[in-house]
Length: 138
Image (tube, rainbow, N blue to C red; front, side):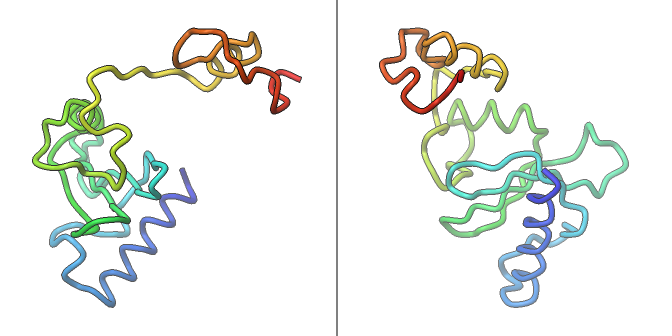
């Protein structure tokens, strides 16, 4: 996430220089630490300006939509659970693929790879009709 942290900080700096209304007062862009990205090129960060990492709020750069930057007084876990459940005022991300999803599943990359190598769709548990077509498991 080193590169995504650099992307978030650079985007914050550019927005602060050219569109001051885009940035959030009280957040130091140099203290942003990226912990996630999504398919819509959104960057999910912590505002790491506090001394206690357990209390760092979430700051999201949402590429599509306005405002682009939003701070959530939630930790990462509560932010994700609130996004999945649709409990926030609005979708914090550009896409809708994880917003208000009632059934979510975490799958480690190693487990996903192992299931695909066995010809199983890791997300459904059913046989994968495309197994082996793209060189997985080879």
